[in-house]
Image 1 (cartoon, rainbow, N blue to C red):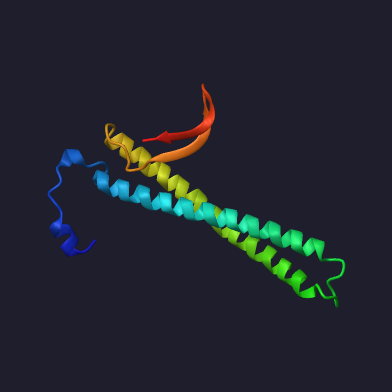
Image 2 (image 1 turned 180 degrees about the horizontal axis):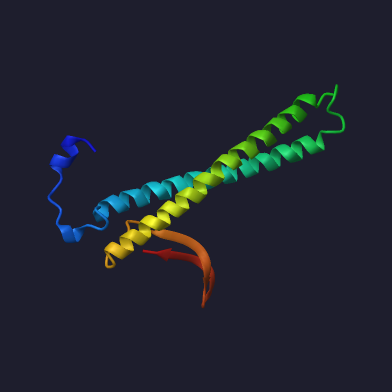
Length: 138
């Protein structure tokens, strides 16, 4: 934070702070962590999909790959598998760390300000006593 950012903010009362930060600080960190988690999920699922496609492609073309007309496709399948596994392994830590940070910031917001909720609408698939369906938490 630069000097101009500090000067332009309103004066924050001590009771509005939790561990030295206000609600907006934790809300911003919560939203950044949610974005990191989403990025991790996208990378992980994309990597898994590319890895599976590459593995299937190279396995189907393996018998006549060397010197045959499918050699380029076989090499492309192997490359796609390796790239997919690499992207998957990059996505998993993003997914995990984003989820942990999101949870920790949510807990800080709930502990410091129990009557406020983060700026987030959650749409998930789950079960209720009425059956299976989409759940929207506001």
